[in-house]
Image 1: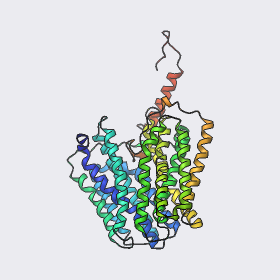
Image 2: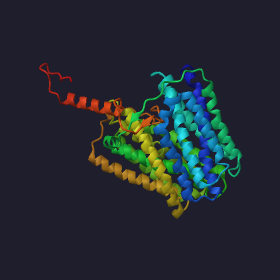
Image 3: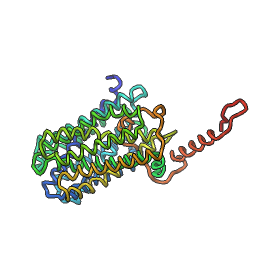
Image 4: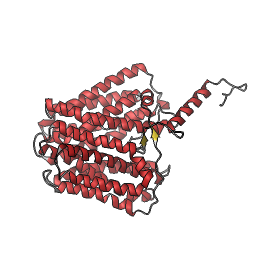
Length: 440
């Protein structure tokens, strides 16, 4: 194990610092926004701005890496992300915060892109599973730790913003000092939205729905969990408990999905996410124990839902389309995460703090209805033909280099179409005289 991790140890340390600082920011900013008398809608837009930037980083980040390389890109983007954290503590105008948060989202997407392409390059087929399992564990652990750091300071002060900036800055050190050779710049992947919808309506809509609900959670839960108090530690612990619940639920639900029509499990998981969500909305204010227990259950079902939707979509992917599908679903998730916080904030303004989870409940229930409808319209993929479940984050790549511009001569999308046509022609060909299929 140590031998497999040694070539990427510096990268994993960088990931830890980067996500710890980002996790602290994700909890700190909504709290400070509330202190600054931002409305719930303004806080929702703050969360949406992050995911707008995230999507932009996914879309154009590969161009930056191709221009100056992995190490220079990483160092430059870390500097921008680090200073962005400090600007939040200097200027408190909502429009400025939205712009800076958009910039932060783009930076984090590019940083992920650098790290994950590097991890793929330095891993072999034999060690890649181990490397990305450790990477996932680090992701979930340090994000939780970063959120808990809120307890060591006051959101009204400057030190927590400074701490977030320091942690993000430290992320540049291991990458800048590593003797490991940087990988080749990533290729761009063409995206065909219509193709994704035809490929797997459940996977496509599911990615958007989970983006809406999870994006709203990340943007607004820190405020909602405080329940109108100034208990920042309670909010941080609640977010960490939900994330841990998601980590606990990911693996067993994935393995169960390998043994049945994934859509049936998606219905069950989305339904339980809806039930736990409405329970949080109705009873979350009745006590800290109830809040934590139901929050853990909510995380177990709401967070793994994206991986299940991606796995279902992958069951329909053929040939070279896997990377295109994964990239498109990630951008679909980001699009949902832009819309979700704004809608949820409007619901909160009308229904109170519990409105966040009324929104997630209603959204999950609508998705359940859609999946039931699709099950009547399309036969299930036989269990024997399903691919093995892999956590979406581990499918190498939380972030994939994406291009949505027109295809050129080397566009992978055209390669996919050509391969599909070749496959169809082969399938339609009649048998030779010896009884075998004709080749084309």
